[in-house]
Length: 323
Image (tube, rainbow, N blue to C red; front, side):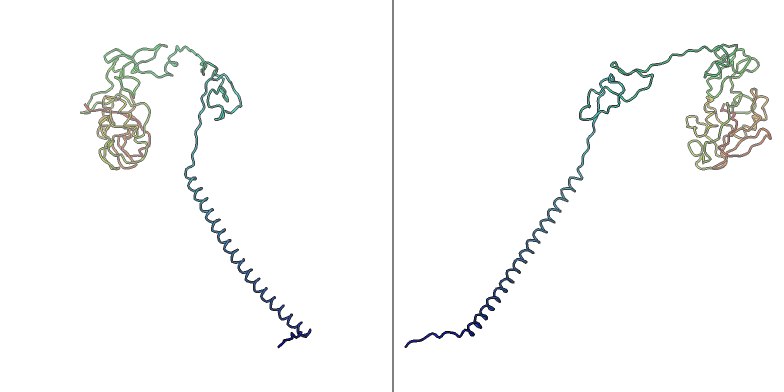
């Protein structure tokens, strides 16, 4: 039996070809879509890897920077000036080239000589002659007096005298002379009707504050802490009285000098004909006694009675000491 292949009619053949072509195109689009999605996911994967790597790098670099930032070190450089022969220049020494054997400098005063031998100061010699009492008294001196344009050593107790300045003050730092009484140099610490005390013959030079500030007188300068009435400055001269100028002036008189109490000064004033050979009792004088935080006691010789006033006020000082 024989089979004969029939030819497909042309019109039908074109239709079948079109269907095949459309089918092939469909498969091609699907494959392209699959390829595009695969590439996109691959790109995302690579992007994530790059981002992670970038962030890790930043963290590592930040950590290294933080670690080394806490270990910053400095350097100190010095220079050795070997001589001064380079003279005055505007040059600046550098630590790389001039740490040794530098010989230049920026400036110097006219009385300074700087050269290979070193640095020396040129001095000026002056001399003068003093021949008068005024010249001598302009300076400082101790245990001496001036008269007739000459300087003399002060006289001891018992020597003849015409002025207090001629007599030794017994080493009292707060006075300039002793006491010339009846033509004889005597101890300026006088005895008299006031029992239990010696009274200095004259006031300490100048006027003084009771205290440099209006504050309490506490121990060890006073017997009690706080600012209260009838609290006395202590008699112990080993105590520092630098903040109590009036008391310090008596300390400098030596031999246990201190400020008098009200009763002691009343006795001194009553017997001023005995104790006031040198004068000075007719004024205001500080006493040894505190009144309050801001006030201390004084004696007013113009009315012969005591009072209280600001510690920082300046009054005269007449010192006593125990017998």
